[in-house]
Image (tube, rainbow, N blue to C red; front, side, top):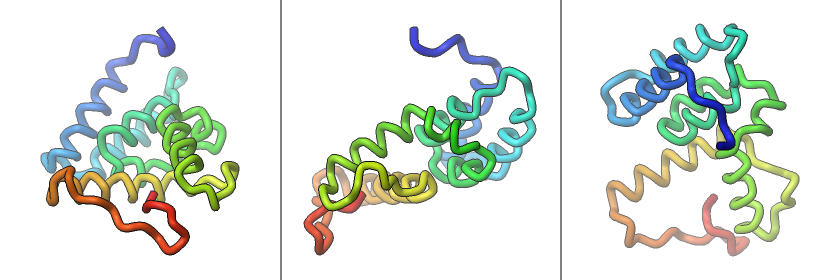
Length: 133
């Protein structure tokens, strides 16, 4: 097992993020909960960022400024996005990652486009030949 058992606070934050994604809760509630819990001794910002990135990119955009650069680097989902983005765009340096805020925005747009248009739509290519990240 790569991660320890999750706390009740992490579980509740995940439920908030799912509710935000479903449109049942405003993202500010999840962001405020994140802020309130961030001062606890067992708080792992990287884990919480992964939860937000996976379930509700709009929450991730709201909490990213509270997450240290070191914790951002430990985020499994942020690493995966960065690696995929670097492989897809040969013209981009693998060390020049876009900001997590950019990834959140891109993820939200992609999910929105897929749910509106269906998964069969193809994405337009940029002038440099890379698909939009």
